[in-house]
Image 1 (cartoon, rainbow, N blue to C red):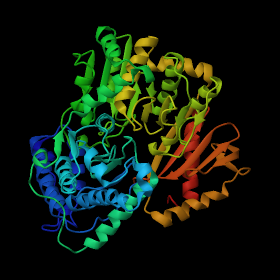
Image 2 (cartoon, helix red, strand yellow; image 1 turned 45 degrees about the vertical axis):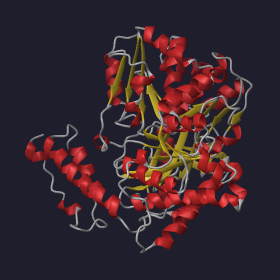
Image 3 (cartoon, rainbow, N blue to C red; image 1 turned 180 degrees about the vertical axis):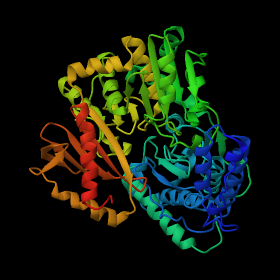
Image 4 (cartoon, rainbow, N blue to C red; image 1 turned 30 degrees about the horizontal axis):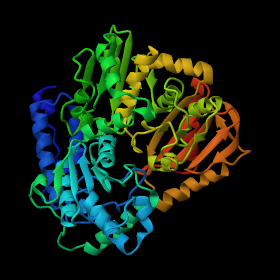
Length: 578
């Protein structure tokens, strides 16, 4: 790309002196996508736009464009428009008020694991952020609000969700706050709240935070900001202490080795001494880039290779999620490797999702969660049930049934596993998140990576070969998922999706050229329609984005695409898609 091509006229995106009607992130997206190699001229333009965005984030005195709402994994919104200094301070004060109210109304105390405000103040909060733009600034705002409320802060800086969750357990903290929108694109900011158990908060808790935040926003509309947006460095604030969240994570895994069967020191020693295993991990510029060399023993290339392990808040213009497209670089390296054993992975920005490949076969969590269950049950001789969300593949169901174990199958959202924490060997959802017995009740890519390395070293099989062995014994399943952007939201969207109720047990739908009967309908989370041949499709609104998601599973490769088409046809028929 020439210097001329790198210059981009973004004047249409900017209204001088008018942040509210400017779209700095829209222009940044175009620049990042046009010039992946990031020529100096492009970077200069991006820097100018981020300077403007920073001013919007710090000076925005308006209400968030979209009403604050905590979904299945916290609050997410557009940086500068929804997520900014004032709104982050307001949400943090909403959390403080929730703990203050425990002294008068202890209703939420059992769900929070905290009796009163005094206990919350002394046990404190673990605070961190991912690599998003202005993460450190917003974390400082949170620290300021908590410090003013007398709540101790364990400051982890940039870190992963799993490491912060481990830190909660090690420090016996009251809660954690992680400023991250997880795998969402570069224009999003986010806010995750976990309670004292280290896991996602229960619905009643997030509903309280949402209600408090909305009340505070309305009460302060048009008033001068009351947020703590001063320039005091975070570690100079009263009651703020620095911690090493990765070290806390390592301590937790070692402490519970007898519970889950993963001896991390032995696993890494075996990895270090196995010259025939190549591991390639794509960090997609996220927080994992700061931890992986330390976590995996700093093995030198080509034994261990990290991709996209530099700082880039634009993620190179890609959607920073574990996906087939984003795995391409890992696959390319593994295909060229002459190692017998090959393990590739991609981790999202806040390190709570992971997807695998061996260079030939891609292994999503639909498969890996089931494989992890089989491995812990059969190779580590751990007994117990498997927990998976309702939108996840039935491969795990088949394995558990034949092993004489139970399956726990709640609605989408890791917080819905709470009833079986301490009982389930593996907890996972199709969107590439997992945890295991004796670990955090929160999604964690690192425990998945360590488990995968141990799996390959112990079985002597690449993941694709191990999966094939399992499918030969328990049956093959072919899942897929997708999502579509929608204009309708809230009650309007729910009203449209209610039209799916006509698809009841006994009715038929077209899948490819065949008419297939629905034999059962599960409505615990959206609408899951089970077909007569054991295949299924499910449709539900996203809890974090303006999307409708659909999930399908066929017993044949060809049938998966046909089910996706059938789901899209349904959405068109009920008016969700045009």
